[in-house]
Image 1 (cartoon, one colour):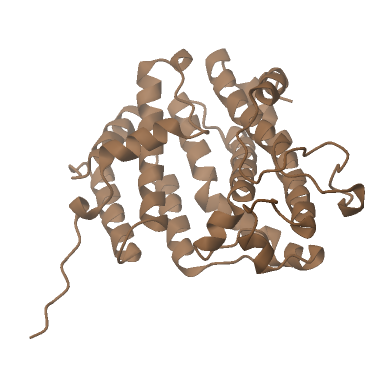
Image 2: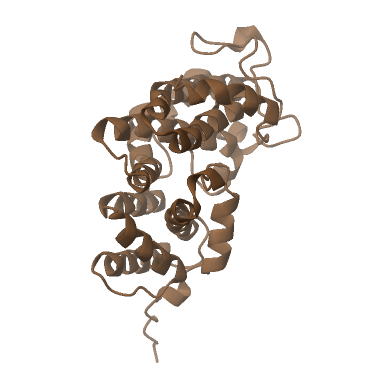
Length: 304
């Protein structure tokens, strides 16, 4: 006799405490004592939601699409004034009410993870930017809402920072993403630099990425750096505490870029890559050097 599949509920989602702890440890968190306890709590609620959606889309066992449906139902309960069942979503409900957050950015984060279940490769840079508009930019927009500073001009600047940071993350996670069946380096660029899937799979190997992949990393890193620079003026439009938080985003992204693998020789450079010194590390997953962050931070505070 056949058994009907069990309906999934909030209890099937990843646990709340672990997710919030993970969110607190992420490099991009802006939970900072300078911002005050209430602001930090609201930011952590947003990051907890983002972490929940990402963990379902990336790590969950079983039917990830059905689990994302559960998250969507929980989100609908938040905005309908109901009581969601998952602890992360209950925290989010309190923040949504306190800050008057819009629903649409949260739904875009869900859409990004649904796309991850169907799209494993991106043909062009423009297509990858469309993905970043779903997967990264909503977080910055929501942060600006918490700050009470979500004007259209500021959101546009934030989008550039968030897209740049997303590209940085993709460049750090090439082998890990490939193991999950995903490639976030545009196919047209891989073709241009002669990068094959074997190179992607071996990016974290003992010798690091091979020559063509290093050149491609430099090319995409230069694009990410330009995005961060284009969004950096956001900082100087904000009050001092919020300015410091945004400057931390930008400086952290630039420090991470400084730690990406360099082309092995100037011959591997393109017009968009400074092979002489823009990227000096040999590991694909470096920790951003503290000194690189310290030197990048004052410029970021000035919105440059």
